[in-house]
Length: 79
Length: 138
Image (cartoon, rainbow over all chains, first blue to last red; front, side, top):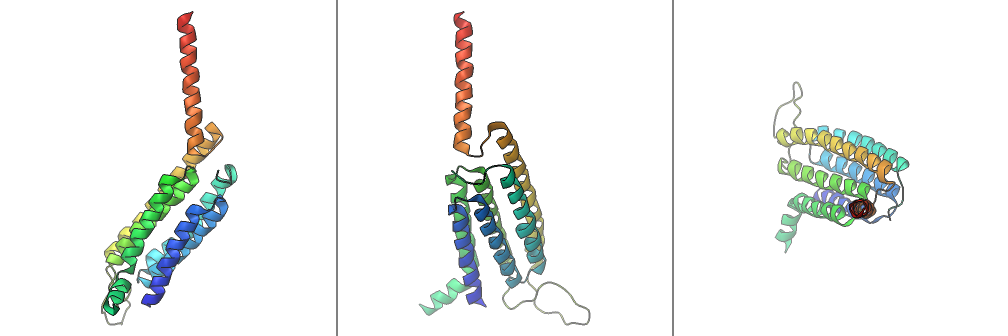
């Protein structure tokens, strides 16, 4: 179980670095959604299922929709 | 060496939270794109939540939900989870507020890059000073 915890944390750090480094904003937002989903799994492992539900619904759902809506109104490529 | 590895596995969440905070801060500071800055703020926020929930975790404990007819036992601390539940909602409010301001900035300046916005502001200021100089000479 602790090994899985370690793998999830390493995946989170890699996702955060990748979201910072991509030039395409839509792919950055998709990477951030996967980051939120892995964070929800991590919270399930930390025995707090209420936080996991909220994170999966709000962090991966609503936030991604808002980011995509704003990117569709502004520009997609970061200079 | 072995006990060090066990110690590292026990505290991997704290180390991960610190690393995530630093990565998010780096994203906020170095990128001039405003949406990237908001993503960095989100990463910092989730890292702080991870730190809080990890502090309340008890290894081998159950989630703090009482079922009828079931014996009690060890529960994880429910206080950090309740606080973080509020924190997630506040974080979404902050994110959406920032995104709405990004839309307004894009309407005003036509770009969401911070350095281009600063350049435009400088040009506007120099034009205003030139106008003032012309009127004062006449």
